Image 1 (cartoon, one colour):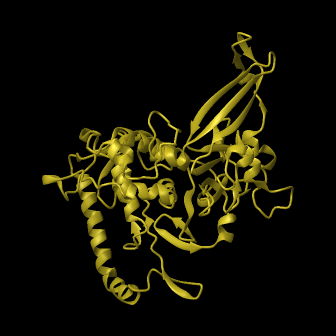
Image 2 (image 1 turned 90 degrees about the horizontal axis):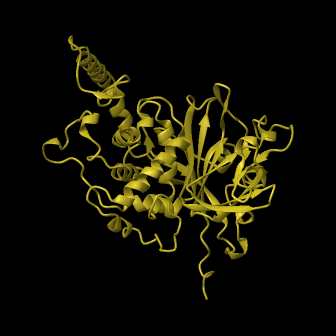
Length: 435
């Protein structure tokens, strides 16, 4: 039972249910929870009122460089093992170009008339026509960074996620990277087809930064998702028998990088045994020439059969926001183990030029990236543990731990065991494009 809305979820039905038992036990639980809430509120009312009187002005103020400044960051309440979603949402909310696009979309009211303002129990019978992932995502982003509340509850967004992404129904811990991919893919698809009567062409006009030069399209026409996160890989496969070369271009929204095996026992930055694994080591492992093993034999069209071959990736086009996923979870026999190796990553100036297919065609700063956000997994397994995020906003770093947001520093960020890294393309200095 959701203690905020008192909605009841049935694991056997895999859905919220509105029916009760013959003895009305569900309603009795609701009433009991309401009584507990009321009694707790009465007991704490005087203490909270006094606390608010003393700290209403100073509750979100911090000393930074000797001057007082307000923290406008808003946390996201955990709805029951939803830290994986909160960490991704906070990270995306700090990617300015992506976030601003959604915040500037026109608002769409999904409920009106008799149902306006009424508490509803979400069930499958409602259908998918009255939900919009884009709209709920927009509302959530608008609620963050306003400074009007300490924490926001993303209930409506979570219910829409349940509707359109069945994999994430229930309250089990989920993989943050998997959720991010599903989220971006569904936002992309909904923007392509328009939502709630707003045509795709009208949506695209809301952001003039979506230029016609963006050719990275995934499943159809380009949207803000592919314009911001979309890049293109060139996959080269060479037959070792006849030398035939095959080239294929693959669009991507993120790159999943293996942590090289020689570093997998190194758990901390300060460990003295051997060199520290760096993000460059992971990128080099991803793009290095690799001989495919016996289970991945290449079907050579010239030899007319499967042959041993080599494979190499080149980046043909870099995205505006480079999302790097470190593959920390691996299946071994019947278990999915975590690689807890510390990976060193730069806060500024990640140079991607040496991984480009045609580096000579890139500008002096078009291959440089600065870190915008980091998602961290704490714990030992993908089905357990906890997710938090670090992100930079207006030159300051924040740590997002569900409803708690704290100011932090760069030294703390670089020590984190990153799971997902979001790098933003460095903008060329004014005047550099003149000619």
